[in-house]
Every structure is written in structure tokens, then in C-alpha cells.
Image 1: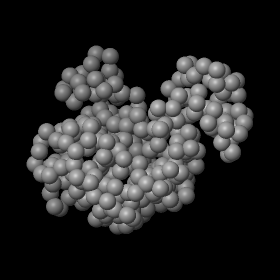
Image 2: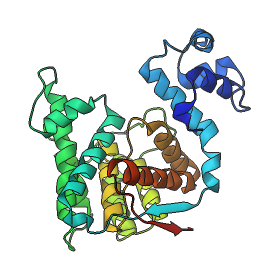
Image 3: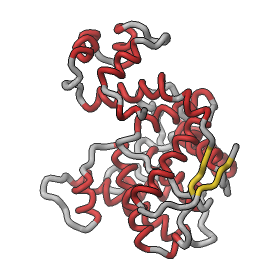
Length: 307
């Protein structure tokens, strides 16, 4: 059963029954809530707010949902034939991926997202929210238009350009590496020291240039996110890079969004801490297949890779 189909009352009971947690005190500590909240939620989960639901989902995926992914074969999904010559398919993919990537980070209404894409600005939408939509949508579509050129390459300048395009008008340091220590919220991952970011990004670029397998793309994504080179927007940049690598390899990219973000974060952190990339790669494959079958309405061929 998918974690989204399990009630929050049941998730709490399952977490409390796990040998690494066992007590409401331990669970309240990892969820960063009071013990009374745990007691109340066990009786009635209707009052759990969205932030606490996200936290419960993450820990449920982290503690319960990862082991089964190690036993699944990595099955990558191929792009539809002539994808780069089908404007409608590109447009659908660009919209879905850009909305999903933004939804992972901020609260965004899909209807309003579509309005902004169509040059209609909702009256109740603030300037930053509009800029976030425009930034991620334009960066994604421009990447897809440029990637059909054989000369397109992911280098450090392109990484900074993407950050600038995503964060222009939102942050003064758009396109610039951070000069401060960055902390990934609710994660045990140490980010690269500010003085080492430039060299680490150059190493990352050289190490993952021209990769084609899902395992390598997952490894590159986990590595990039652990570098965390910018003060903000690292997730959006990293997912844009990952989408580019998928398309360059002729593979359908995964759709990561608000619905599946708990498993995304859990598998990503697991890859970064343990070095076991398999659960992240399997998760990405599952989301690629779902995107191909449901959103594009055109199931593509599959290709099995045992990596």
C-alpha cells in the first residue's frame, strides 16, 4: 500500500510500534511536537496541520517505506518517439515538471499556476509567488528547447544561470554561490563548506558529465543536493539538472511533486547518508513511469536496467 493511502492515525501507530521509536516521547521528539499532540492525534487525526502531516509522512517513509525499494528492479521509461519534435508533448511535460518541482518547496495552487503560465495574474497572488512560477516554468521550457542541440552541456556556468533564472527578482544573490553555512531542514546531511563550493561544483560537473543510467543520475542528484551550493533554490536547480540528464539520456524524467515529496525526501536523505542509491533510483523510476502513463496519455516503451 502506498504511504499516501495510510491514515495518519495508522501511520502514528505503525511508527510507535517500530523498534527504533517505541515510545510517544521518542516520536514527539523526532516530529518536533509535544507528547500531548501525539496522544491527541492517536484519537483524532483530523486536526493535524499540513506541516505536521509532511513530517509524519517523511518519517513514515524513512522508517517504514525504504526497505521494500531495495528489492525492486530499476526499470527506466523511454521518452516517446520524436519527443523533441512534438511541441504539445514538450509543453505538457514542462508544465507538469515545473509545477511539481515548485509544489515540493512552496504552497502553490495549480489553477493559479496555470493562469500565470497563460499570462493571467490572479488578483490575490503576491509578486514573489508570481516570480516563482514564472522562474521555474521558463527555466524548464528553455532547457527543453535548448537540449535538442547536441552542444548543450551542463557546466558550472549553466548551473549558476539556472539558479539566476529561477530566483531572479526573488533573491539578490540569484546566480551566486552562497557564502554562508547552509543547513538542510530536518536532515542529517552536512553541506559543503562555502569556501569549497566552487571547486566541489567543478568536480561534480566533471564526474557526472554524459551519464546515461538512472543509477548514475540518482547518484548525481544526491551529490548535488548535499553540496547545496546556493542559499535557496537548491532543490529546484537540482531537479532541473536531473530532468536535463534524463532527457539527454532519452529517458522520461520523474515527476516529483507535493503528493510524493515525503518519499522523495526520505530516499534522497538515505542516499546521501548511507550511500545506498537504490531506493532513490527506484522511486525516480516509478515516478517516470507514472508521468508517462497518466499525464502524457501516451505510455512509452520500458527498458530494464539491472545496475
